[in-house]
Every structure is written in structure tokens, then in C-alpha cells.
Image (cartoon, rainbow, N blue to C red; front, side, top):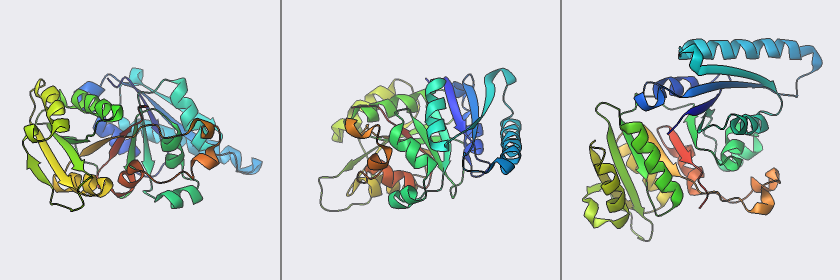
Length: 282
């Protein structure tokens, strides 16, 4: 259950629009929202006053746009390194979900450009909803969960079921990619009995009563997950992203960011819909 949401706003992108769409979902309507804007340290003393005023306006505009119950929304304006501050505030408020924009940069580009979303994605263990600048935000009806045997994928299923249970006309897509196959196949709908991973998830989803479809394909996991989401025109994709940080690297951010690419990195960059990553540790 999502009870506390941190929305990081910059004045650009679709993060506010995404959150407004989320709060239309009955199961999210009681959640408390904290809207955060961070004023970076690198500005000179002469320009800091103007930057604080600009930050205040960004927060005010975001809250006005969201039009939430005043008792359920608060704002934080803080100075510092945006990457670190987002993680710190998420921990302070014990956020169940972080929502923020993303430029959709590839891994090396995001490292070189000091990407805030890449940093938070890499180091926060909290579920994170990334909203790229170039996607179209739709009312959430179709939710797809990419499934494997990981605990993170199971957490995604729980989140999806929680979101969908009160959505009128909601539909769940359970997706699994056979990465052992050397041949790529067209995404297809299958019976849950033909896939053990989908069968367990289908059995769990069936108790909720909303339409559930099982889809599968063969090939590279990242490419196929994105292809499945696009083929079935889903509105939100949930993907498990286990904590892959070596313990020695957790306090060494620059080293950690240079660790190799991952399935999550590929999907967050290439998916044509918003991506919710559950960072449960396996």
C-alpha cells in the first residue's frame, strides 16, 4: 500500500502530471504527498536569493496544479546537492514511492551529465516511478508487470494489484521473457498454465476479479519487455530491480555508478510508458 509519496519537482518534465494521474486512483487518494524542490549549491551568493524565490514558485505551481486536499500535501524547499537531498528526504519521510522526471539518458550519458534520477535510481532502495520527458501520460487503466522469480518482481505484483483493485475498467498484463531462447519471437498472449512463473502470478491476481492477461516472448529481456509494453499499449510498467550494489560501493557513489549496465537501466531509458521500479533486496 502506498501511503507516503515523495514528488521531486524541477519545474520541467511530466512528474507533476504523472502524480496527478496517480492520485486519481482510489487506492492512492489517501496517500500523503511531499513535494520537494532542491536549490543546488553551485550558484553564487548573489544569485541564491533569486534561486530560492524561483524554487518557491516551482513548489507553489506544483501544489496548485496537483489540487490535492491541503491536509494531504506538504512542501519542502531545501538547498544542497539534488541527488543526495532526494534520497535523504525520501528516508526522512519514509516514502513508499518516489516520483520524479527523467531525461531518458543512457547510462554513460547520465553519469557524465550528473543525472539526478540515475543517482537516486542507483542508490535508493525505495520504489521509484520514473517519468521521461518524451512520453505521453495517460489515465492508468492497463498495468503490466514484468515477472521472473525475484522477490522484487513479486513486490511489483503486489503494487500492481493494490493499484488496480479499485480502477474501473482496469486490466493487468503479466509478462515473462524467455531469455534462454536464442531466437526472438513475436510477443503473444498465452494461457497461464503454460508458464510456471505466470501461473503463480495469475492465480494471485485472479482473486481480485479484474481482467488479467498473460503475455510472453523470447529474446533479450530489456528489449522484449519494452516491446511487450508497446504492443499492448500499457499505461504503466512495473519492473523489479534488485539491489545490485556491492556493500563496498554503497558509500562510494562514483565507483558504484560505473558498475555495468542492467535490465532496469535499459527499460527505464527505452520504455514508451512510465516505469515503476521496485528496488527490493533479494
